[in-house]
Image (cartoon, rainbow, N blue to C red; front, side, top):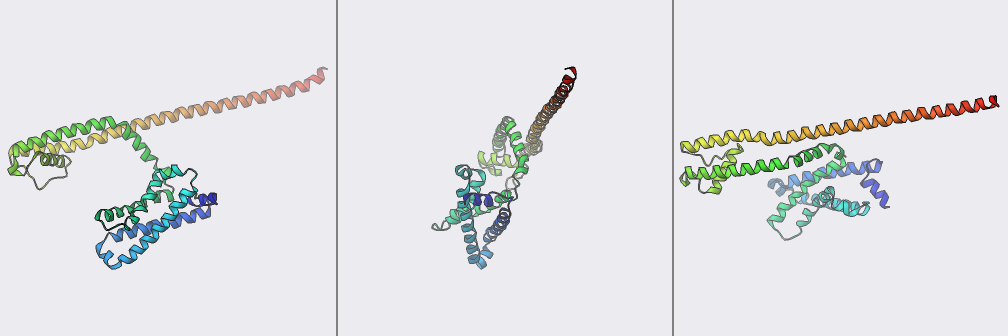
Length: 280
């Protein structure tokens, strides 16, 4: 019984497994639509009761599915603490929070149900095609020391420039304190803009222009670091592939030589068997 449930829930090659995946994908899509509609106050006022009933139906179905996955999983602890196992749990827990006494925080947490959409990756079997994300993780991990140094440099720069703007402009021009001035410097450096506070003095405007120009130059730095790591990892990967191909070609040639030697040995043995009676 457990093996049959495992084939249906975790498998996708059987007909029942494919049907289960299709039904589950439809249920996930509909539940996400319900969560999205539930966030609209006007729709919630008109159709709130219907949406809540539908949400509970989906939650109960997903709870049963989660229980069956734990029951039929070959390694239960491994599934429970895996990424998709945590996603499955987070997709059902928020709805049960609604049973607790009314609280704003709890109702906000209930919107985490939208994470159900992540489960589509399992259904569509897209996990093998997500190797690009693994490559990105390797590149980011390799470039981590450089990025940390870069971020520390930015933090020091923003702190110095923000404090300088506080001294130059003062509280009368909107720079009320150093933390707000540092926030202004961060927003200006990232080219987002901070319309509520504008430098008035000539020196302040010059520093502001310098920060904005510096922001465009700084954006390219982490991109270059990560791109260089991508190129290096790709080169190493291609070199490893070339080595593997060379080893495989050598192994194939050795097999061919062994086959030829075996054929020669068989021929020599046949020849000796044929000649021996004649000599005798």
